[in-house]
Length: 217
Ligand code: DX5
Ligand code: ZN
Image (cartoon, rainbow, N blue to C red; front, side):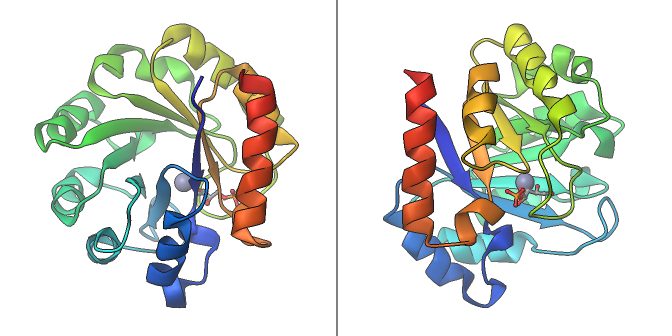
């Protein structure tokens, strides 16, 4: 099974994001995870669609945009126009998840649906036909470098049972210890921010690849 590694630029130096993306172009990773925070759905503020537009000019890998924003309905068109390859929205952020996912698909962009640690995975059951990815948050959204929440691991198994062919992405606290465990539970897309950028990203991603390959064969 192919396992996608998606370094999160949330933990990179915001002053040189284009250079970071150029470096990631040549490393053993698959998607660039872009954490969009609006200061409302979660307290911090990070990036908007303009950054996606600029990074798209240099990125050779898909931009995996994780929208941690209130009223995502007002943002998806801008992110699609900016060049997002996937737009993942939080089930908790909209009253009309089905309609929003339809909208993202109509914009010609892959759609993902994210669930916070307290949100039951059953919320995605009836929209699986509109999303090719379910993002199971393994920390509370808003900050990099938090500890992996063990109670979220059974949620990964539950989504895998529900959606055998979807991307199941995990986000938060992924490192050499937790990565093999989430893959064994059924995840096939791993976001890693703090882990990737706390050392040399080339070495860190190679080590991550090696531990996930060992369990995914
Ligand atoms: C958290 C973000 C994550 C974050 C994960 O709200 O959605 O993508 O970058 O960070 P780490 O890998 O540092 O736990
Ligand atoms: Zn994220």
